[in-house]
Image (tube, rainbow, N blue to C red; front, side, top):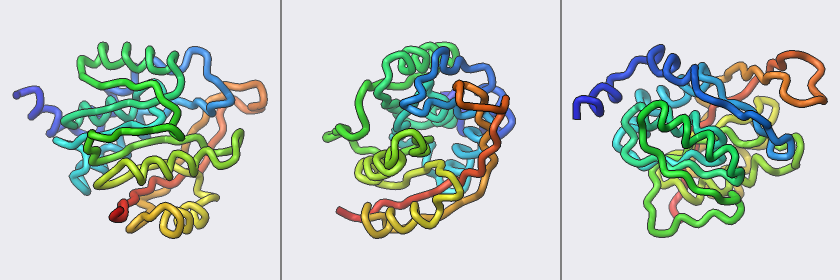
Length: 217
């Protein structure tokens, strides 16, 4: 019980520090657009979800396309009741499991393609995700958003390139039955030089942190 109380009172810098030593992709797969979600963005994303909206603590949280588990583990550290990490890549799920053990938190890990996601019987409050930007596979970002808004009953938090802002909002409200779609803030996403086509050691991209509220079915 004391540990749970400590998690709910966790400070932003404390959360960021705990996430800073997590293992990341050892052999990232370009076709999946695998990039690490850094501790700076992760901590602010989850801290905002919890402290501004109450969408994490005591909630059932799904980290969709969880990769190495950073977002989901942050939710667990902030007192989420249940955290489920879902990813198509088994190597990433193994890394996420190792990270969970290192932080001494519980997270359920499921291997599944987002387009075939079925969580019937599981009431999900909040979905958190850093989906593919859709630069390698057009529409991948929309596949994730569509699935997230079907699964979540309370809110979806997601990162998308700022350049796609109008498209994201229009599609969420018109096609995916979102009740609301709000950009909470614009962030700088530092992409490390992971793939051969990267010409710079680090690429700075503007991304939006979105909060979507699902509509009623």
